[in-house]
Length: 491
Image (cartoon, rainbow, N blue to C red):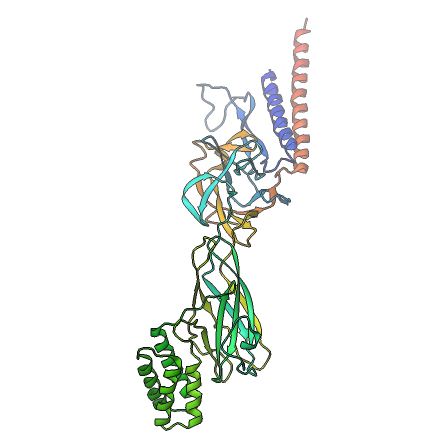
């Protein structure tokens, strides 16, 4: 009789309905992967062989569910407002850790616990690579944590000043330069800089047109104190020689005359007690002796006499071409000042390469520096490669870590653990671990979750099919019962 076959069919249909019901129940579960019941026919073991070339008279004894296969196709991505919600677009699983027990999931609904670790709703830790000073440490996989420590400050070490200095400006009638007297300079512009403790300081750059055409002096002050280098006997010799050379050529002298004048200036600067005035007098005498006019000699003398004396601050000297472009290099670019707040001496280099001298008004175009104060974490986000980047209140950002993904040669071999978790098995093979966007791994989308891949329409159709199979097997039992009743009723 066919009771056994029908009963196996009822049991298989019931298990199929359970699989379908589980799919429907999890149609709104993030990261859920639908399952499919797979069936196999059953035959009784027999030593009797069948007929030659055929199956003989052996009749099957029914069916059974041979396996329940997971469907790991991609689910739709839905955006959220939580930056810790992560979705994998492509292959791969998030690697989770619970006290050393590793599991894998496609559900990227994460949150931050009280210690800053990234966990799921069951307290499992998301794993990845940590970072030190913005550099990812790929040697060890660890539980990802969002640090709450302040971002350390950085002292200014370079400053870029780009401005146009009006070519119509004339040398101030009041000398020498005095930062507190606007009559001694032509133009000024401020910039905020930072020390090693992150404290801000006010820096002011003052620009003074010299008597030499197309030559300006740039003074740098920090908190009202000069940060320019101090003139020494050695630097006076170098600067006076350079000034003599430049001024002679600017006055219309030849290269040979410029060499003669600069040599005289160098010789005078080497004498004990040399001052800009004594050097200027020697250069003027040499200029006259070299055949330059009195007016030219006076122009050269004035350029040298305007140099800072020994012990005085040395500004940066900016020389422009007749087209208004800066002629490199500018001089005295290294600035330094000693602070009284416990911070290290503030030392920085000026960059004037974007300076111009055109006929328009004097105006700053570019002002930047590379220092900053300390900052607190005020936001974070994930890149498509899983890189976790923190944003701080001081305007800086830094890599805090990177999510790792895992994949398997046979994902069908993974063992479902519940709570959207899977465990590796011998059938799945060992995990292949890497970061998103490399090799066969998908990319990561932040503020998004992967929806369940359950197709409700298909599941409802499968439900009808399973119901009909159950009804048909029940009808088989009913028919078999009627046949037995016929036999029993024989007289």
